[in-house]
Length: 253
Ligand code: ADP
Ligand code: MG
Image 1 (tube, rainbow, N blue to C red):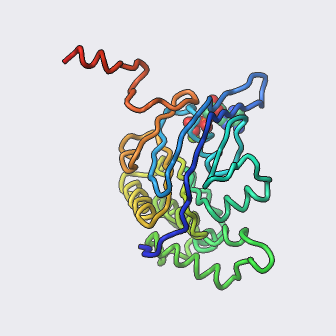
Image 2 (cartoon, helix red, strand yellow):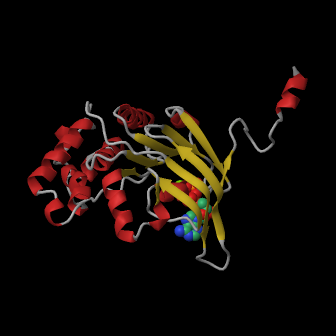
Image 3 (cartoon, rainbow, N blue to C red):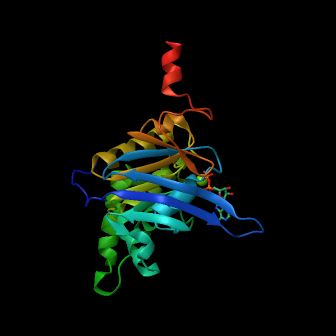
């Protein structure tokens, strides 16, 4: 596993963030007045039922989408002030994404899939040269334990191996933050354990990890769990819909 440390992600802050989708006849409030903070090198799980707004939250954290209102601050910068080019730079250099569907290109061998973020990164003199791209892709595959599968296409790999290739692809740019949206949702328990162990290692090497899941077992890998329900964050200590006031708990003793 990696021994070097990464450039810090800095603090991530959402202040009163809402996201309204205005696509059909009715507006959908996917996030409603969400405020949260993720410290540098935290490992946070975001949990909630289907449709609760987890992916929407990840898209905002990952600069794939912008809030309808509120403030999203990344390392002290107000992201809503960034233009599309700047957002793309932040995404490419700072954030690694892992999705439930591995999103690998079927016609490319593993190492070609892994090098893709480097193909898109940088322009002019900052372009990463092909030989370096290949070396870095191979090193990332080594990190996820798949150096010997570099020339296999996705269809020749198991689901767990495909997701490890996707983790290698997320790593190849040396991102400070990994955003994983239900990364184990399509995996059996052995492959789930492999992918979670990789996320643990990436956390230990200094990265900030945000893991979205609806499985409690998976969330237990994180240092902290943030619960989302119906587009809102459920305050700590409240489990289920009916909060129990501390006084009531005292009375029961
Ligand atoms: P989760 O990831 O927790 O399942 P999502 O963030 O995907 O939840 O969705 C939250 C809500 O926003 C859902 O009601 C969903 O139907 C709606 N939604 C998500 N994406 C879009 C979109 N692009 N356009 C319209 N509605 C959307
Ligand atoms: Mg989702």
